Structure formats: structure tokens, C-alpha cells
Picture 1 (cartoon, rainbow, N blue to C red):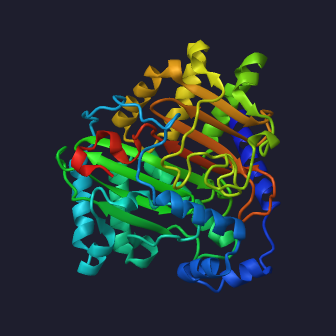
Picture 2 (cartoon, rainbow, N blue to C red):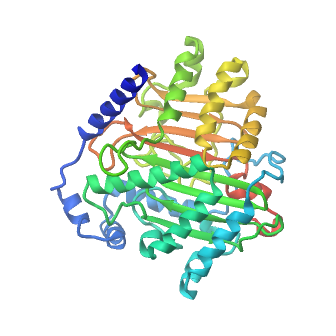
Picture 3 (spheres, one colour):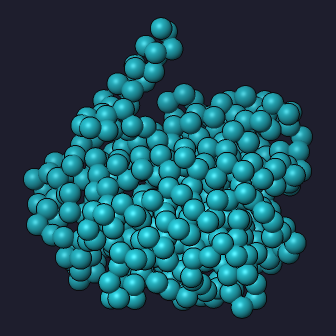
Length: 431
């Protein structure tokens, strides 16, 4: 009973926290957007360069998108031999069959829009704002419900059952946010674009994949036979609960943050000092110059380093090396990884966790911000085979000017050319 009451209190506190920052919908920002569809909204953004900080960032993103893919590294050099071709037990035939049903529902024009070469640059076109910057593929809200459902069936067949529920939660929270700020044409459960790459096949000699992207949810899924790479992913939520309507009770991205805080609070003072690379969430020591290509903080990414279009970023190791820690502390790191890699099917995820565990001797944990129970914070787990980022953000649609725990962003990257399955592609299928 105490546990149930505690959870109820926590939910009520989270609800009151974000509702205290609901915006004034009578301001021009909202009254203008309420009259627009997603394309008019994007055109208004581009024509008026508003907000200017985001417009400037999208220009920087365009420059990064034009670069050839290399992969995230610590020093600009891709480390070879980290990833192998293997059977990960993916039910690839089921995924292929679901995709073929979807393909059969499409017109010739829709097939041209959704289908890309397996090595197409558009793998890297995803971005997480509500702004539709690159309208590739098919948008779920623009196809018949039956077609949208077949797209969801592909996603469901590809992910673990728990991972699929996590993706649905992110989409539903996006819908809920759209209702809260009266912008249902900009943010809803189907305001996502879907792309197919290559020809769906169960053969390892014929790799293929799909990409889903939109506000607060971007998933890249690459297949090579029964092997899967789901990376990069971006999962976010503002707010990170639904407290009203048919999906009331939905929560997302709490476990990762809670376990991360537990880990940080359990370190010795000396270890905490090593892990905490900046005390403030926007710290003078971050050396923010205004160069959106290189700065480690900007208004959209905030503390994230591995967000949209950062496919080739150089990110040196920082913080606390995990090799000196106890097995119990290692277990907490794996619990965070388990949750952040939840999209992977169960067997593939277990293998991925083994890969991470093998590299604990060169895995770093870094923290930004305070680590009291009520503090907003950022942390990163980084090794040669994975980067996991967790960040609390200031408001975009809600009115909080400082980061709060009800707006959360998470990112998964596979460094050293692991993203988009690059490291296990045959030469002719390289991006």
C-alpha cells in the first residue's frame, strides 16, 4: 500500500509541476500556429527565421548533413574491429512480411516517396523538433488509418514488445502536448515521417532498414538478416507524463533518470567530483562561443552532444572511469543501458549489453548539474561501443526557462561507425 501511495503522490507531483508552466495560448506564437498545418508552420519558420536561435541551428545542421558519414569518435579516428556480423535471433521474416503488406497498400507515387536506396543519405535526415525540416518519406497523419497501422505493425515487429510500448508512449505524449497547447495539427500521435531503405529481405546479403522521425521520437532501424542495429535513437517528452484523457497514467523516461541519480548519489565524494564535469547546467566553463557547429551547448540540444546531424562529432572521454567501481555499481550502469536500449528485441539487447559490459574498463560516466533529489541534471555513459545521453531541458512549449524534470531528452549512439549499421555493412552498402 505504501508503494502505491508513493507512486500516486509522485505522479500527482509531476502533474502539478508541469501544469504550473502551461503557456498563455493567447500570445501570437500560439494564435498564429493554431491556424497552420505542419507545412505552413515550417514555411512560416523559414520565412521569418523565428525563433532565430532555432533557425540558426538548422543552418548549422544543413552544413553537418552535407558531410560524408564517418561516425562519432573520441579523436576523429574510427576504431576498427568493435562490431561483428552475427545472428541476434531477430524474427526477420515477420518484419519482412509486415513490410510487404505495407508495400502492397501503397500507390506507385507513395512507393516512390517512401522508398530509398539502402545507402541513401536520407538515413541521416532525422531531427527531433516539431518543425518538419525535411519532409521525406510518408507522414503517418497523411495516409489512411489502415496504412498508418501497417507502418506501426512494422515498427512493432522490429522492436521488443516493451520497446514498442515506449515508442507509442512518446507518440501519445506528443499528441497530449498538442492538445495541451491547442496545436493538434502540429503535434499528434501520427506527426511522424516513415522511410524505407533497400528491399526488405531476411538474407544477410541484402541489408535494408527503416527510419521513423518526428517530434521527440526518432528511431533508425537497420537489418542484416537476423541482426539489427537500432541507432541512433532520440526519445524525448515534454511533459513526460499524461495526466488526463484516454492515455492518462502514461509515463516515460523516468527509470533512466532515477537509476542515473541513484548511481551518482551512491558514489563517494571523490568519485562524484570526478564524474561531475560541470556544476551548473549552463556553466561558464563550457566555453560557449556561438559557433553552433562546435559549441557544446546550444538552446535546442542544451547539454546533448550526439543529437540530430551530429553524426561525425568528436567527443573526448570525460568524467569517471568505471573500471574501479564495484559489480553493484556496474549493475546500475547496465540497468540504465537496458532501459535506453529497450527498443532492441530481447536477444539483440542482451547481446548488446554484453558488448557494453566487455568494455567497462574503458567506459566513462560524466554528470552535469546537481544531484539532489529535486535537481535537474545531465549524464552520459560513453565507451567505444555505446554513447547514452540523458538530459533535463528547459521549456519549449511549456514556460519553464530553466531545465525541469518533466522535460526529458535521451539519445543513443553507437560510436566508431556503428550508427545506421555502418560498421556491419558490406562495402557496396556503405553510407
